[in-house]
Image (tube, rainbow, N blue to C red):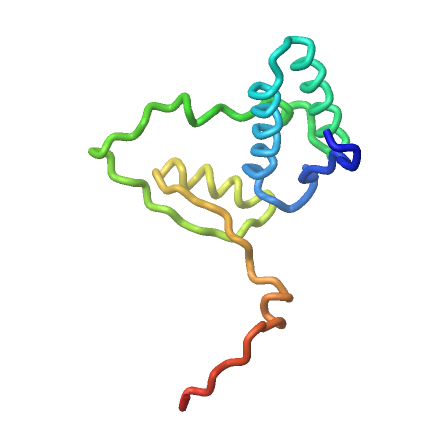
Length: 131
């Protein structure tokens, strides 16, 4: 690690989708599995990752990585793609909607909602219709 690294990761109490928070855990544990060869180094790195995540508000249940998508069988061309639906992230509600849509075989993804900044700040002037 670089001496300036602060172990600041996405805080668990932030208003981001749970999938983003789980991917932080997955990424850090994947790094531990891929780049450390000795058992002692792996244990040391995993302990460091868990301590850093606890400092960022992660509960114990969230410290295990989510199941890898590599374990799922690859989709065949015979299976039609699931419809996708983009929804704004609303803390507490988005995960429940995701489970409901998943039971109907609809994949949802989270996109940023309109913010005050996006409504007020416009980088380009609008071109008049006559031009």
